[in-house]
Length: 178
Image 1 (cartoon, rainbow, N blue to C red):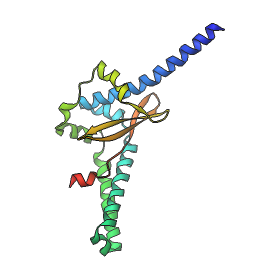
Image 2: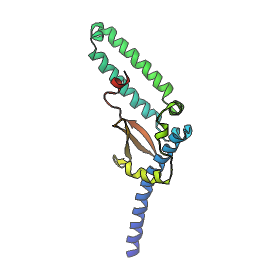
Image 3: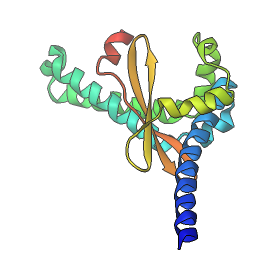
Image 4: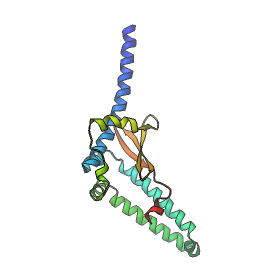
């Protein structure tokens, strides 16, 4: 009886550590992909369809807000709605074309912040556990910080891997781009 309890406890502890390890390993692999600009690693740990959908929805909502708030679009009436639809479709085509591992790789090559990324090591692997916030049993997120603002990046379980599925953008992103 005591052995069954002990084996059950060991099994529960093993499952917990395996669960944590797979999340840490996936995050570490993505970190390596970004640091070394490895397109294949980036491809393996990002759910591109979900991320593209997330970015498209965000940009289309922002375009709709802009067109509804700008006086010139109000004066155009139905033509303004048509123009915002064309803009949204153009954005969708651009996102489908450029939001992939090749596009991210190109951005990483041109990035001025690539020197700020710490080199992947056992310390960054183990330290990844401290920056992960659970968002349910099959999801966690990390907060990417840039210029004092936090941008949550959500990971979801895909078998034994964890992949980026969603990125939250700030409400004033288009204002900063202007």
